[in-house]
Length: 138
Image (cartoon, rainbow, N blue to C red; front, side, top):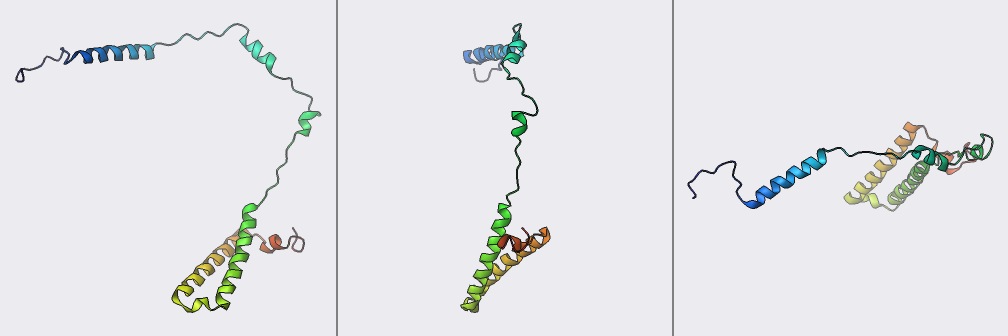
């Protein structure tokens, strides 16, 4: 039995024949196109449910929305500049930069302050207009 060659047409077990017939039925179901039938008057029914448009000078004209840029990110960056500058001054006044760890922290704060200042400078943003809007033309 183990040494006999198997015929390729014979199923190994009965479940394989069932799986093959199920696969054939699935393929046949997937390949057949369904019939699409649109009832008569469908477009007219849908069009009758759509509300009519009002005149251009009425309600539609008053619904115009104008959006103003908020610049929350620039406000956050200006606040970060102030906080970093105050932190840097406080660290240096208290002698925190005398130790190697303290010096590393001071240089990190300084690098962050410098990076924000360069970013504001490249964007040509007047930082002081965020801090004092009336004085610097904002």
